[in-house]
Length: 249
Image (tube, rainbow, N blue to C red; front, side, top):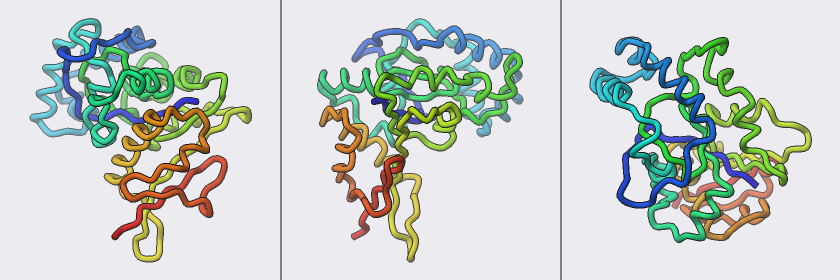
């Protein structure tokens, strides 16, 4: 069973705690992406990054000095977005790190796919950015089916905790033999169930933590998730979609 998760824009360098286990599997392709980005002007990159001048300047300088092989941080500790804050890997025990290393995969526009303990350096790049490298018109084409091939294992079970922007990297290549389970977090707004972005990100991180703490191998066990006010809605769920509703007090 594999769990897929989106990356986060906010990243840090932390070389004082856990050391990375290995380099990302597609580091050579990452080097190609880096070289392509270095060939662009600051204004071109600002348009690709869709950011203000200050953030563009910071990331342009970061690119100029980027080293893919030294001063690296384990991916699961490098990302600082909401999902990773609620996952709280910095307080995991060894068994939970081992579980995540075997089961969690972080999808990335820059690195392709990451194991939690792969060494990374901070970068800024979204999967839907207008980046054409070689014959690839965009990053979805550039990474192609490599990400799917890296995620699928003998169980052929994938738990989707990623956003649509990233999960579509996998969905395009699914086969009838695969069991792909999308996790939906929602709450009642008026008379409709809707997904609230921030709460969904919180729940994704919390669910990764729940799965790791309980050493889950059977997807059915995920239905017991009851944190942050969420509970499983069996009446709205199916074999391919687990729906969790947050009760608002």
